[in-house]
Image (tube, rainbow, N blue to C red; front, side):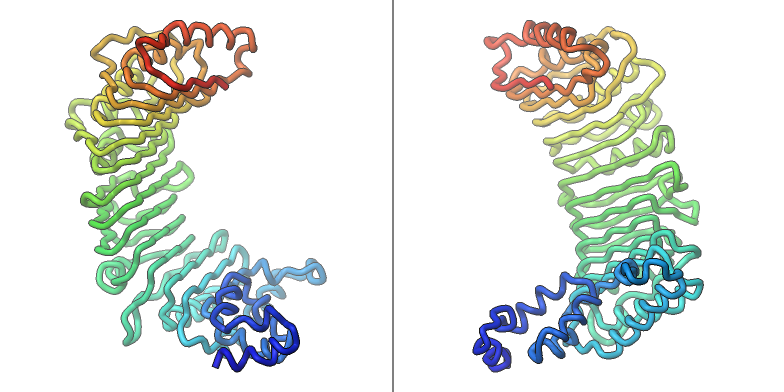
Length: 429
């Protein structure tokens, strides 16, 4: 029993060893596997404790030491392979809460060992499975999930640089009834659909899709959604992505590279996010909002917080401003707006058709701005936001000196009149 195991330690005045096994297991679960095994030298109380720790954390970098800093990659890989083989053989935890594996370098024979370790972890039915194979040469295909007679307990799955086939998608749909968090980084997709009725948080970053079909994501309980696709990876969004998240989606972030997707694809991505309450957009084109052939964007009736980074890029400044205004027209209940690096080269005419009234806007944050060009836009925001309470400006002083910024500050407050705009706070950095 835990109480009897702790009595000798208490008598000897060892407070740490006097803790119950459950609490010690919890502490050891956060340590690298090597350090956990090294606790056997502390006392008899710790001799076999490592065998029942419900987490295994393996990282090849933990096998590089000062004494072996000149060791070859083959020797380091050998150390990890021998250690992991014995660890998995002798580990006897009643259940495995987490298995984490990091390999950013390995011997040429790494696939055979990695596959054995991951299959062993899947057979132990963990709550958390985290596999990071960044920078390894070649492709690793993940084994099937949800194997064995016991129901799959997996709640969090994080994969980096792994190839995923149709069996993975099928496992998500029907073999992982408890999965809530899914993070996929630089993975290869060989399927058309991600579907899960339990998923709450989804991250898809710089993944590739081998088939030419639109990727369909269906997750009716999804709360948080993040998608990143950069130039360095010929990502799946080149052919489009649709999201069916029901009414539960609260936060969404979409980060693209300039011009990587067609305006039609960007409009499709935007249209699937109409239920969110908080939205971050990076590098969306102006024509994704302006092109009438793409169809009308839905109303973002739930949206309260909007962040725009390098958005509505266009060779025509007027189109850029119109795109901003048209998108804001779709956000009637917006309370906080942040936009960074919104550059215009001229001072375009901004009429009432371009900018809507923002009756509910309380906070406006303008970051990395050059108000020499953007001053007129700011004035329109002040005039169109009668209930604004907080204004924050981050001016690039490297472009103009302090004297010029002081002048801009005076001009801003000449537009802002306390009797007309009940703004309680305004800061200029």
